[in-house]
Amino acid sequence: MPKDIFNTLFNLPSELGGQVTSLFSDSTIKIAITGLSRSGKTVFITSLIDQLLHQNRLSSVTTAHSAFKTTLKPPLHNVRRFDYYTFIDKLKNEQLWPDGTDAISHTLLEFESKSYFSFMGNSTFTVEFIDYPGEWLLDLSMLEYSYEEWSVKTLAWLRGLDESEADAYVQSVDSLSSNSVGSDYELELHTKYKTLVTNLKAAHYSQITPGRFIMPADLANDPMLLFAPINGASPKLVKVFKQRYDKYVNEVVKGIHLEHFKGFERQVVLLDVIESLENGYACHKDMKAGLKSMLGLYDHEDKNFLFQWFSPSIKKVLFVATKADQVAASQHANFATLLEEMVSEFRRELDISHIETETQIVSSLKSTTTIEKKYDGKQLSFVRGILEEDGQLHDLYPGEMPSQFPTKASWQKDNYAFKRFMPPKRSYKEGEALEHINMDKVVEKLLGDLL
Ligand SMILES: Nc1nc2c(ncn2[C@@H]2O[C@H](COP(=O)(O)OP(=O)(O)OP(=O)(O)O)[C@@H](O)[C@H]2O)c(=O)[nH]1
Ligand SMILES: [Mg+2]
Image (cartoon, rainbow, N blue to C red; front, side, top):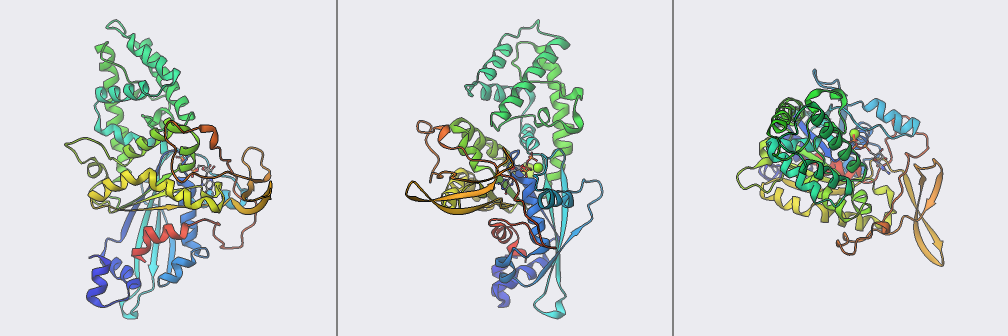
């Protein structure tokens, strides 16, 4: 029953609806934390757990709701545990970011909320967060395509990129004939494609499949991965590649990747707006297309892919732009507008499917401070933080964020270059949570109705 209706029927203050409705709802709420690679998923989950466990930087949440306690539960059998303790130790005590993720992991947080009426007993519910290597998320789109369809789509994408290495790969595909058969051809094409996508990834393109070509993890050197997108000129080569593609899609994408996503009710989509801005029009467009595909939003007429993949249970999607601390606080309003612009089309589509959406800019770990300085007679907002490139503390003028993304013609990559920062060098009191920007708002938007 919706919280508002329940409250009206029983004449309860709105802040009580969450704990009452949670008594009647399923006791485990599955939340998938998704986003393209390096968008900040692992740091975000670590901070979210840290904020919920300690609550000393969540005052807006704790004052709006009745008291709640959060406990980290032992992992489910058969799934890997999200290693909160190692990550938080690294961030707080070593002042280092965690490594990129190479496996799917889960975490369970149990909530106990103080009930309004003592006779009712406290309400409890569990939230399960899923962390995922960003590279693998786009593979879910492969579920919708046969090998031939995937090849046509991928080759068309490569043709449209205007990158010489992509053109060279397409040319080698175009030069195939019915005589192009045998393991030498297979290996050569696979190696060329794998090198190409690895380089495109480094050049900030997003729509890369299969993810295991870039982050193979336990499948490194598995012969199943020996395929690449080609045309129909060599039916024998197509047959071999198709068999491997089908095996990959069935055993890895369906059998492993999709399994972890079944039945989630809420999804957080992390976006790196700054990366999108600083790498130019082509990468921005590609990132949006990658996100769209990751959300399962396709322009097909006959299927509702979102529901097909992600089960009909999804109710809420929260789009979060991370790393807001890379710019000065004065730029946050524009930062939020850029996020809105990036996701407005997705929000419309989700809305039609009755899925609630929200947006939020955050910094999971605030690594800079905004300081006002006079420069050339003008008062400017600088950021102070430890630069990743030299490990030293700097005061930098990070520049201004535009209020909208530039057009293709006006987009000058060099206008936008933002620095990367390390976690701040400081000591934490016992039980002190990570310093953040807006993680309290994330908790409210994601879980507020349950508290
Ligand atoms: N300044 C700043 N940088 C951040 C923050 N969160 C993440 N980063 C940066 O983003 C990088 C990637 O963060 P992760 O959390 O590992 O990203 P991920 O999405 O889990 O990446 P994959 O596991 O590779 O998909 C970090 O190494 C940091 O450089 C933040 O709150 N502030
Ligand atoms: Mg990660």
